[in-house]
Image (cartoon, rainbow, N blue to C red):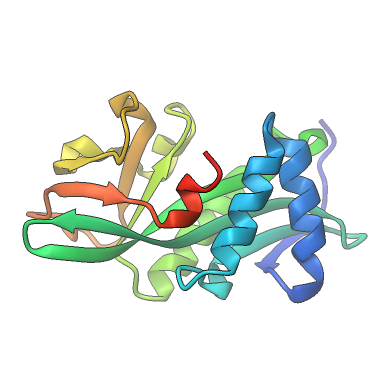
Length: 178
């Protein structure tokens, strides 16, 4: 794998088509992922600063990650939190560190914007290296039946999930593309 020069920055209007194409090529059912990004972008759950692209020296989008608002439903009520989904890297550039750089940068950005926790449905061998652990360790259930080790959470602020037992709820955009 050749190393590639790239920068990570928030998406801009002219990136939207490139992000759509990237999701289509990066996933087996890429049209679903592409539609998910579009639906979230058009919803009140979208945070422009948390849609990040990795762009090569020619301006081509080779990676994208989206963090958006989801809900943690607890006995104390509904608490807004952040969901990481989806993350895509162009297949030609996978396993070159771009996905890791996107996750790292995105988590830093979430924390700088004051968000305290992030949830992800993802690969059990990838996300723990950033500090994610099964959400059940915090007493928080996935919104649908999945193996415990693939639905994970990270506290961006230590102890921020203490006493918040409950269940994650995704906004309508997620069920529109299942």
